[in-house]
Structures are given as structure tokens and as C-alpha cells.
Amino acid sequence: MIISKTPLRISFFGGGSDLPAYYTKYPGSVISTSINLYIYVIIKKRNDDKIYINYSKKEIVDDINDIQHDLVKECLKMTGIKSGIEITTLSDISSKGSGLGSSSAVTVGLLNALYCFKKIKLSKEELAEKIDLFVSNEITNTPTETSSASKPLAIGANSF
Image 1 (cartoon, rainbow, N blue to C red):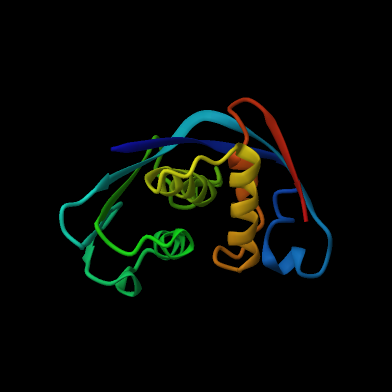
Image 2: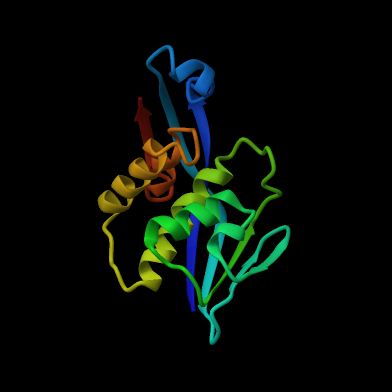
């Protein structure tokens, strides 16, 4: 079993500049810091070829393309994992629309855990590069993921 713990974040400056309506026309910057509230991703190998995903919903699928949770589906595709896995996400907060970067934290935690599941050890810099690739492929449509890859209480700044 693999458990990933990723901090949520608070943005101090540039909060609207990470929205597509802004960053597609103008350069932007966001200054943020991680906080002591977390997203947890738990991954477990299954003894069958099914994919189980537990979040506010429960999904059980045979094919990766049938997954409804877009972040999970695209992270699995990116890492090449096609079956035999159970993924659970938990949060210290109600994450819908909190403004604390929960989608970013799920992306960071999930990719980190999936690479660990594949026995691939990534440095923070390598993980941030994978996340930049993830974002540049327009999977999440927002350039804010890398600040969640920084260590707790460190200030991260993103420019795009």
C-alpha cells in the first residue's frame, strides 16, 4: 500500500492570473505557500484487472477510458498503468471550490503515488517536470500544480 500526503496551499498574490481567461492573454505569477491541511492518496495493488477509484463517488471499471474522474484517468494514462489498482483520495477539508488548490494537490499526490507504485523514484524537481508536462498537455487546464510539489511551509512561486 502506498500513501501520499500532499499539502494544500493558500495564494497570497496573483490569484486570478492562473485562470485561462487571464494567462492565455497576459503573463501571470502566483505567490503561494503550502499549509498544514492535506490531500491523501492511497494506492493498493489489486488481485484482479479492475480499476477501483474511491473519492466522493466510487468507480469500478475494466477499462481506463471508462473512468469518470478526469484527473485519475489522465494520471493513469500518463504513467502507463492500465489495470489492477485501487485508488482512494481523502482530504482534510471539503475540497469542492475551496480555493486551496485541492485539484493541484490531488494531481501532485496521485502522480507521486503512481510513480512510486511503478517503483520509479522521482525527485521533487522530476515530479514538478512531470506535472508541467501534465499541464502543458492541457489535462488540467491550469498552470498551478507545481506549487503543491514544494515542501510544507516553503513559499512557492509560479510564473507562466
